[in-house]
Length: 343
Image (cartoon, rainbow, N blue to C red):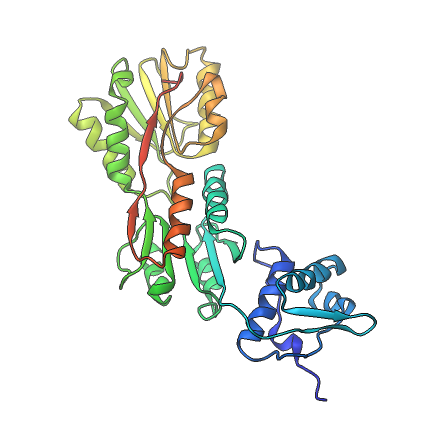
């Protein structure tokens, strides 16, 4: 019998955050679906898998055990593993790509995975807001997944990102957190309305803001954050007669009594608090802080940091439901101001 060219179509992606045993089992399922593996075909041994794919024996065994659990593989003592049947139920195989890791992105990820359930394969990638890495991860993946869920935030080159995203079949596409111009066709989205969100959140905070005369937003240069945030911020300050400033570097900006700072980056929040405390100013009385993006830790720092934030848990749940419902809706995720001691 001619040997099966197993390792021609079974690969492990070292860039994927998906556990290797799930990559292995998913690749075998895909090979069965494409007719490359047939009923009663014998598979490589655990030792051969470990050697050829450069994975541990435990990982290889765990991958096979997962396939046995769902009934696709069987084994014979002293002979090895073989394909038990080829009646594969069409599974959801999702390519999930975030621009970065952060506390609030973890909230999205956790709620997304929880809402999808157990019978779904998710390969997870981080492209660090880098367009070249984004393109590299997408390359030759379009036929491998049932859905592509993407957070499209780029430090530079966003005008070219639309060309890459438009290559994805729209029935497979879910944009998460942000919509970008130039995407054709009907696709799904769970997104923030950045300009409106910050404007309305600051309106909700007006009572607390009224004891301050100046609002400064820390918006670093070469940031992936959308410029619409600054537009909404300026619109609020002009409409309600606050002095305002867009600050690029929190370490260089003077801090005076009567000012409120809005930070976007988590590192800037730490630096800002340290500088305010070093000047012996009272946070929430003499100087105010509003932090962008809610995380659990902000409930505890200095008896609570006031936040303006979208509902990240809801965003992840909505994205999962768009896939499960095969929907092409665009869902605007709610955005909230949470009052705490720092304002």
